Image 1 (cartoon, one colour):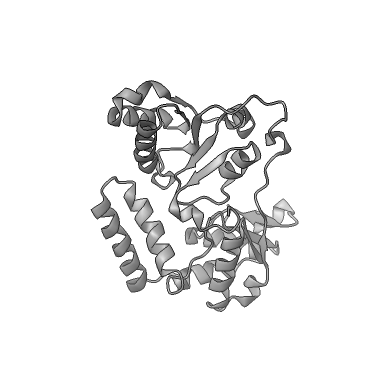
Image 2 (cartoon, helix red, strand yellow):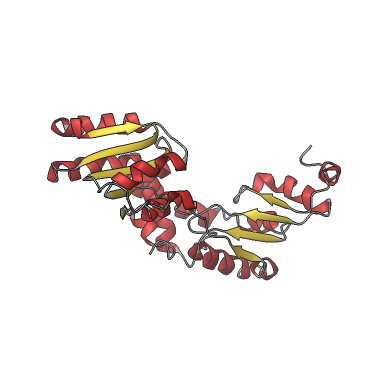
Length: 273
C-alpha cells in the first residue's frame, strides 16, 4: 500500500520525512508520496553525505578499506576497496540515484561535511533544485547528558559504545586490536565496552591479552540517558566506527567531559573537529 498514491492521500499528511538513505529500491514509495501531493524530504543518515567518486577518490577508498579491514585480513581489505572502486566505474548507479532523488522536495543531512558533499553531487548531476533545498539538521544532545558539577572524579577507564558491535562498519576488530595494545602499555587503565555484541569483543581482547582480562568488562546496549554515569566516570572514549551520521556517541561523551580517540574516517568530520 505504500506504493499507492491514494494511500498517502488518505493520511492527509502535511509533509513526509522518508528515512531511506540512497536505497533506490524505495523509489516507488517516494514517487507515490510525491504523486499524492505531499512534500517529501529525504533523510540522508550518512557521515559523508553523497560522495562523488571523481572528487572523493581517497575518501571513498579509505571508507571501503576500513569496512574491509574488519574482516581482519588486511590484504583482503585492500582488494575489497580496489574492487569496489572498479565496480563503481564499470557499473555506475548515478542514473538510478538521480531518478530516485528527483521525487524529493528536499534533503536533510546531519553534519557540515555531508552537506558540502551532497550539494556538490546534486549540482554536478543535474539536481541543482534539490541542492538549493538541502538542509543541515545537526544531531542534538539532550540536556540531561550534560555532566553535573558535583560528579565524581574521572576513573582511568576507556569507554567504547555502539548500538550493535556485530556490524562490520562499527569497527569491532579495530577496537579489539587497539584496546589489546593500549591495556598492555597502560596497566593502570581498565576498559568498558557497551552495546550488542560487546561480550564477544571483550572475550577476543582477553584471548589476545590474557593477563589484562580482568580489566575488561562489558554491558548490553542501553538508552543514551542511562549512559550518563558511564560517560561521567570514563576518561577516554574510543570510537572505532568507520561511518556514523553524527557521531552522536562522541557528542554525548564530550558533553560529559571525555577525551576522544577516533578512527581515521571520522577525523574528516568538520563537526567533530
